[in-house]
Image (cartoon, rainbow, N blue to C red; front, side, top):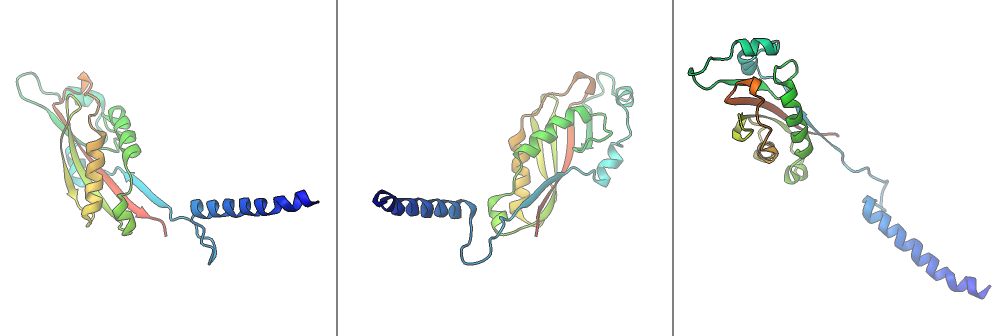
Length: 184
């Protein structure tokens, strides 16, 4: 019996230590009801803007793109599409770019702390070698932090894959919508 009483303070200290560890790691507030951590929804919605739809209709087939490719000597060929790429002749090329950007994209910490929300439309250009030829904000979210976060991810994802020879393009201009939204 005396040996069991000797262990009681160590067991209580262990329980207190574990409770403290749980409280710190789960951000448990002992003074009120438990709070769930704020979850953020971060989506890259890759919508086509009206100006891009006019330039590159989504219904164009691969054969139509090849048929309209300029002959040699006419000059470089460029095209504009949405990063969504659904129905685009570049859909297979765009899919890994979209996944790479989605993997790298996150809520800018300072914008998250300030609970900023908004939608940024970015336009960026890729040259035939896969290099990022340029990028800028087409439509601002109203927050410089959110706009810069979207620009940073487009830059961080570069370089991209070179164009397949069948594209016969010198540059591909892409638009992507970055929606920063927090769940209530």
